[in-house]
Image (cartoon, rainbow, N blue to C red):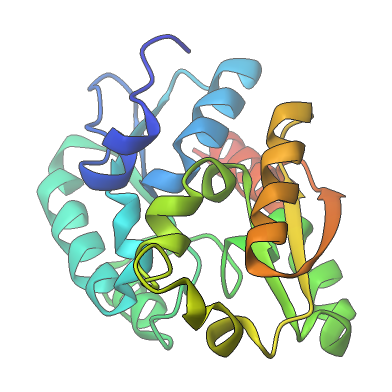
Length: 216
């Protein structure tokens, strides 16, 4: 995995595809580590990955247009395209656009759901209503995606107003990394929230990619 761009690159620039596969995965840069790991472990050499900048996570209204542009740019070069975004705050617009473009996408309202497993996440219902979620990527990029965009680096006094309705920070871990656990715990402390650790692995993301790899 030495050729994987660092998190700052994945946040701001994304990842270009390397031609050679029959299937193109168009994903959020926040999922690059997980997808490339699954590709390597399963020998999915017929799959190529391109990632849009993870910072679109902060501007969900821009995701549908960015995905559309990537599909149209790459359509002629691949037999099949699979979009590795959940709804991600697009209010159903991304799903509607993917249907219109004739491409499939991963199921779920957001990555927190498909990492935990969509059925399991839905079953928890109200139990997690006051939880704030982080994944491996978001723990590593906590300042870039939480602390700075919310202005807490400049106005820490806003913390209680922004997070006053939350009670718990849930770290959904894709990997078993004690250093990330401690960093996530520190993030919870900074937000004044109780810390909860859940090892999810790759959840429904892995199942979705397995299905695509076998089908095409």
